[in-house]
Figure 1 (cartoon, each protein chain N blue to C red):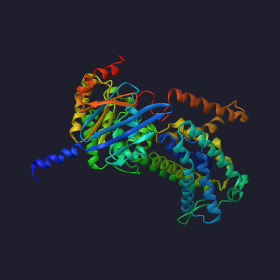
Figure 2: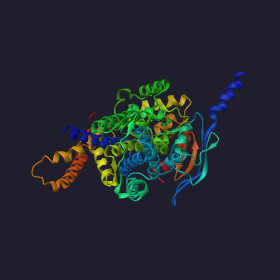
Figure 3: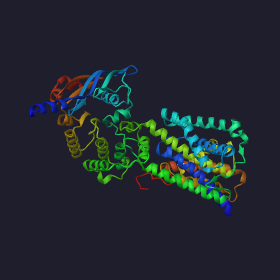
Figure 4: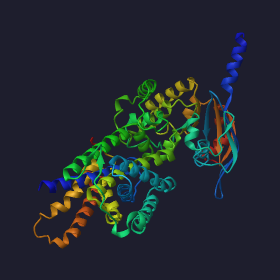
Length: 256
Length: 294
């Protein structure tokens, strides 16, 4: 096999669609939260979901992770349908997420928060294999939480809680990360560290999909941006294309 | 006097076993059950039934009691998996009521309201437990064993899964924890171990009837856990000691007519719970309200 062929093959592999959402709908009673959404998340690509509050971004995440059941439509993960699969099984397939309201394990220590997500099964006395213990240390270092490892999540400062939320997802070796407003409310310094970490992990073969209102993060991180409003994807493209579109800007900034 | 103290310690151990096992689901898994006395009862009745009809081997009676109790606890796990919070408390209350009815009505097995009498002393490796000090030893051994098992469980991966579930069910699921498996297992472990308290009680009293397995007992156990400290290892043991010492201590207080002891006891329990909730929600052994370390 020559170099060109080899390159072509890796190319195919990195652009392979990991998650495929087709004709997805979700109704809450009479409210259409998601309408005919189609979305591809290709491997190695950072996709950002933008749009006003209530556009259905988190609802979309909840359906991908199995926390909500779609009213109709399909979601395929590496060719396999996810319909009716329990959230914990979906998690074990390599899809991990953070929550907008963080949902840390508040009364557990920082270390326990990270350790418990690494221990998938609940068997009674399972000590952490040494590879995982190393990973735990690495994650604590990278997120700057090493000094706070024995503090309870509930006692941490806001930015630290954000980093802990990220630490959990970093620790689990997932293929796809779904991040729900991960950087909101961070001060500029923490923000830069945060973005650097995300970029770092994107280079390590993690595919990322982010819901974000912070346009700075959208510009600095995204390979592609999907714009949602009222449950529909109105446009998808590069961050420049989306952010420069006057129609979308009007919806987003409220001049409609 | 010695026998009196020994007796108190045996009864304390039984209560501590029950409080510990209740705390396992209450404090670590966040499952507030008002049916814990039922598993105490199932343990006691099973041991009595096996001892009266088949064998006086302590080991076999314990195994049978744990097995029956853990199996029946699946009936508790079922609603626990479907409803949460206050709805589950109501569901467990229903189970408590059904349990008491079965204990008092299933005469061929439980002896009805009259209960089961003449339970033979248990035998372990050829040794027969008869005196109070024998039972003191046995009770201490079982309590110690359960403390160790609980400590290992809550400090291991299983304990972390339980706490993760308690703190955020959806996040635990999103990180690959099977809520159903963890909850079912925790309820089964708790009920199985609580049954040992029942075994001890049945053999020690050599008599069981439904009176001690009523809702009052379930509430008292919950009080022990809350007063001592939910989600702490030693809290329930401390709670059991305090709740048990109170009636005894009150008899030494002058000017309280004996007929009013019960009422005053209730008032003290009630105010203790309210004060704890306000000033020390973590219980006596638990963390202070603000940050402080244990």
